[in-house]
Length: 176
Image (cartoon, rainbow, N blue to C red):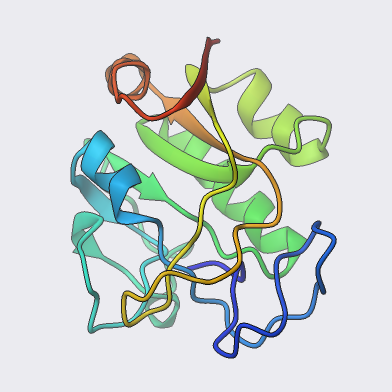
């Protein structure tokens, strides 16, 4: 779930030259990203059903309190955190870094506190995507506007670093 797009397509992503106001916090990860990385074990920030495609074998929604639940130790986690309140992104990224297995999607704001605390010193690799992806509405329709900011995929653990590096997604991989 993210606030990268809105239901009416009239307002757009935070950090862009477009309006920062959004109507929805549900923005589905483009399916080509999941196709390139493979299905994960757990998505703790999944949109409510029905879902046009799976990101993981197990989907948790905000109603299930994903930060209060134990993430299975061996689970490979897909994290596209809710991009509403800054503290939500920070909390989910801290949890992901502590978990240490999986891949997260963030805006490529490499100078931020969140990046310094949860990525630079704790991640295993990053793929800065070429161009700005278009997220999708809950019904699967591609958003008209792109994400409004550059996006980076961040791997935790050597297995996910290898998947990210070999994904074939257009961009630049950086090993950490």
